[in-house]
Length: 315
Image 1 (cartoon, rainbow, N blue to C red):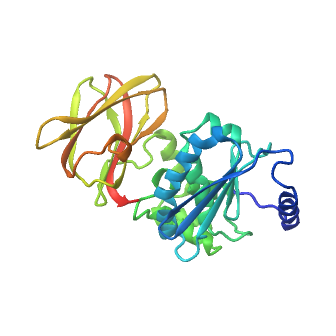
Image 2: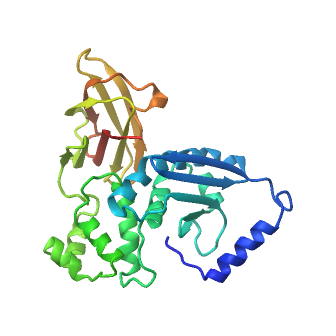
């Protein structure tokens, strides 16, 4: 959540923080510093139980920040980002001030795999909107959520155009009509009819990313597509249950040359739940470069959206 504070409050807080020696009422702080391309992330924390979440945050930063900065705010996005852990009753999860993201430590501990939250906040660092922009909060927050879901699409289209208009302080609802041919009310009415399939159609990008929407389960294996895998590249599998009941979806990646499965992954999904997995990651001893096939088994009666990213950018 974008959050602006009065400069005197920020200054006073900074002076207070620097005037208290470590060890006076709190544990000594540790720092985690990572870099990605020309950008740097510094995370300050004083609780080791936060380290599993921090590991996820550093990975999310490496994957997403430089791509968002390049796509949305070239030459404008801050080169350095900071993360601090604080509790704030007004913002129980996280909020952003300038290039610093504040995260509730209790939330981080309980939701260690919520990398998407950080990507949302990283977009607020990137956005570079004027303080007095005319764009309503639902548009700005919606753009951050859009970036959370699609932070490495090379051609974000309409949403990128609207984002740029907000940066120029030229936002109006008429932009939706101009760019899509439909009013906000018309777009909202369409979305309410099918809230899960935001992208509307199945597609495959040239940057090696494939998404399928509204796939109906038949309780048997279905072959979706072949792909060329490059080791050391960014890859993930994300799936969303569009059904009202829980179900288990199984994915298999086959080596086309040997005909053997190199990865089999089953995920249990509650109604409307979204999960993400790195099936070809370095941590799992990624397979060699070559041709592979993705197969999916969806329980009969279950409906899902899923996407596989298999090497569109290195990180």
